[in-house]
View 1 (cartoon, rainbow, N blue to C red):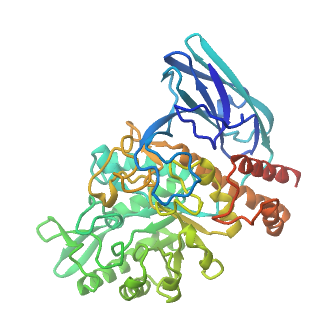
View 2: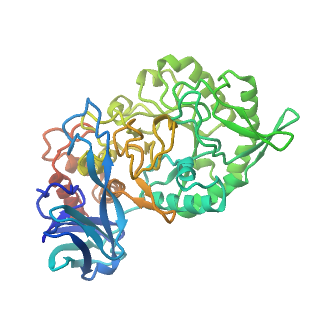
View 3: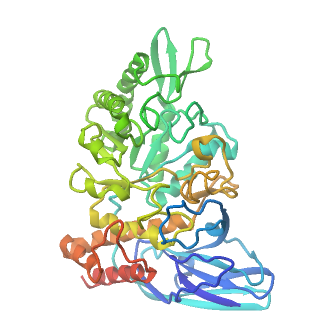
Length: 538
């Protein structure tokens, strides 16, 4: 048996022996989580068992890295910072190890080990022993737990949560007891990996839906339309807020109040009529200029604000108008944005917007530009936010496609720190639909939204049989980036921001930007080690 100890930034493909240098030691702070891998290859078919020994063994989680099929690895305009650009099996889903795992002769596999020292400090070793039949191998890594703690995350991070995907996959009804139980599991996993802001489906979210088509109705606010008046039941919304806060969510991002791609229509809204039947009262047939929808929004806003204030989350709420408008949508968007700002006075209204000319019109007060368009917005917006999605697969900007090296995923944290970014957004935490939501998909079989996006763009967790969220290695690596960001903030508290920025750019050919950073895994690992040692020394 061959065994290699590797960092969390490697991806172990079954058909290729890893060429990365072995990962012999690393440091971490007392309250963070750090991961490494034990990659192995057996001579015979069979079952493999793994055992951890050392003082941190009891404080470590073990996962087996499983492959998933990648259809669309990248777009045609992709740059050269990819591991592969072809379809095939890629490592991604992390399955908790319970007993043994099946292995085939000559194939490479990986166990993922996540260490949480939980207050321990000092140096120790952690050994990994793998046995399969008469074969066995052992590897050891040295770990230094530094006597310091990361500060709480101050980045506002939202990765859009799709309740309809959970209902479709598990065949459950929205707001049933199984729904709340499963939803809680997925929210908790998100919060445990840095997500502190959640997309809240006041009404069925009007995102990635074919024009004229529909997503499954998931509407937290019950509406009754009677005698020309609107009445609202917010009990499910209050339950949602309580559940999310218990899981660790701090901010609430209210769903878009107009459709994507220009704010031309109302979202789907269902109401109970005078006969007690559910009836769609707004949707694709509702033009943005509808006086009745304006009337509805004014009545709704008045009552929603009371709920928000009673829950004490006024300063933790965001509202949306429409996603990524451009100049041809300016007139419509400006009018709709004016209405939302009027009926939700004092609240933050945010929207993805990468067109700086559009921002200069004043229609969007708080834009969220894509990372490849962020430079024009730096220093010119109230708070700097950014996002990436399927379109950010070139120019070397960070992203999380399965076909990309994990370096490209994790480096985001250092870049966000340098730019002083306040918020980061991504559209797909658990989108298990084909593009435009024309059908639901099985994420274990289809990872590219039916060919619509590069694999890995639309989700970072997988639904387990018992209603829990299985993490991906991409989710873990991105969280490592957030921990890097927090470590830099801790270092800043000791030596000042100016010296931290100087340290980041030291020895680089060009200052660090979203498009300019070293493409070597060793650089990122060594940078984090230097940060830790500077924290220790200061």
